[in-house]
Image (tube, rainbow, N blue to C red; front, top):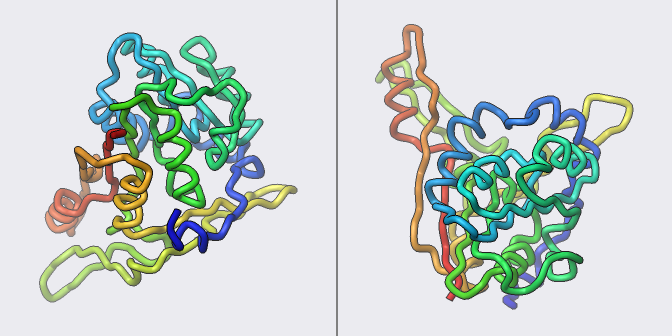
Length: 260
């Protein structure tokens, strides 16, 4: 692999210390972002066919499983956190199979075999995984020839944790998106777990070229991209400007690639 792969730092990324908090926020059906934006966008890009084998990497509570099951495809979810895995099995065990495993080491996970899936999905999970190339290699290893990888993530060009946000220009009555940093990869702690145990969720910002080039290095060529704006409608004195900004600046990105 490239020098970039060798220079990537390995950071502990399991959400196990945050699992109870995260489950309280997500619940059985996912957050409102999952229900209104993420799951519909993934299903559009994925277009699962009856009988296909679909692998959900970083499955969390398995919120994608019912949609895959409804499409008459076969769902397998992989999740590193034992607590989230138990919640997935409780909520959606009738819709698929769930395995505990690290996304960085899929090739060694019992129960998974090389070239046994038609598609792999990262549903708002890949930005919480590191190193990127190890994760993408594992996904490619799982796919049959012509299989596809669908990534739905926060938009790396417009949502850089702690380095981006909305701004207001009074003179022009303009709502704008402020980007402070972009090209430099960042490991960013986001949330301290509110309880006796302490844990921090990590987000890994990478410029878009890292995703496109990383997929290509693993023999996965992008054939479709979808940029997704918010579902929210603003109200109040700045509503016109805010709604225009919401319509023009995408905060989520979907990528579909295919294995050569």
